Length: 288
Image (cartoon, rainbow, N blue to C red):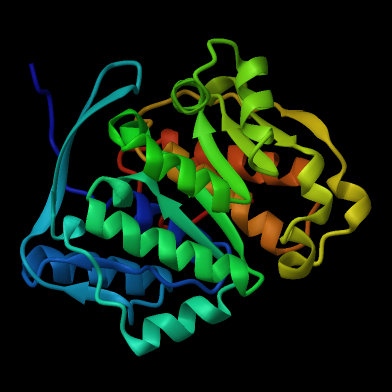
């Protein structure tokens, strides 16, 4: 029985970019929304949060997600991507923005279509060559992505932001410990989301020579190999939709502010905790 229903803005890119903007990090979202009422609705929420929408393109029909939440706050999602599956036009303005970006986050959702994946991989590679940090959230669809696309994304990424299930899929390892070791062989940093158990920030040997130094000004002595366990604040979950996206925002904001690695996990946990105690993924205000 469905007891109630509500409409909320959402989507991985919207959730993370609004979280970053609310935390004071200037950011833009590069995506496609429909040229329709729903697309204008999403633009309004992005602008209200302070996100630059100059690279949000409009065509087609806006997609949507049906998210069913059980009594324990866990959700089951059914998605129609709509306009989000339409590859972006690489405009001169977007090219310039990517060249200057200190960090880009690529969502696994954007790698489902071959043409779109090639555009995102090229953009991520360009940011990396310019000295920016490349972060990758594989998302729950990672098991549906072409393995070659995933391997190319991991090769260019400085940070992987994954939950335990996604880690198993990426690494092919059943244990968390083995999965972490596997990811750190190709990527300098892993932010592992563990829900009520908090998170782990894992740094590999490449972290000390990675792009973290130039893009964020973090002290090199903080970037030695380590497995940092970051406990979560215990809250009663109402709706876990968007918790991983909120974690990404806290993690990346603290990194860009030059904080040490343990703060990346702590900020991520704090942001996620503030999402799960209410319905919907949109962060109107935060308390850090």
